[in-house]
Length: 124
Image 1 (cartoon, one colour):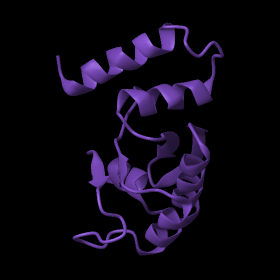
Image 2: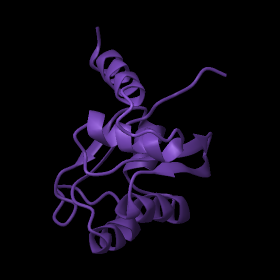
Image 3: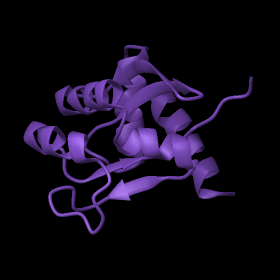
């Protein structure tokens, strides 16, 4: 099975285990953060070149990150969507290549380091 398939199974298992009794999008983001060993997670809806907004976030820092990407049109989620591949920036404060000039400063100020994103697509 692929890494994505394993991750999907892990997310489903975590959602079903009952540790977090409430259902909803916040729980989905919390489980996604846990399954990917990240400190936080957010899910952003995108279609074509249009950012539709955030579905959920797992914590306050992720909320700021999602808002910044939505307002500025740049950041790891935007790149992951446009490039159709995972994006990781392990040194947001001192990147090898400057990718997000408007996003990086405010993201760092919010407490985000490092930043990463993956694109998930749905059937139409």
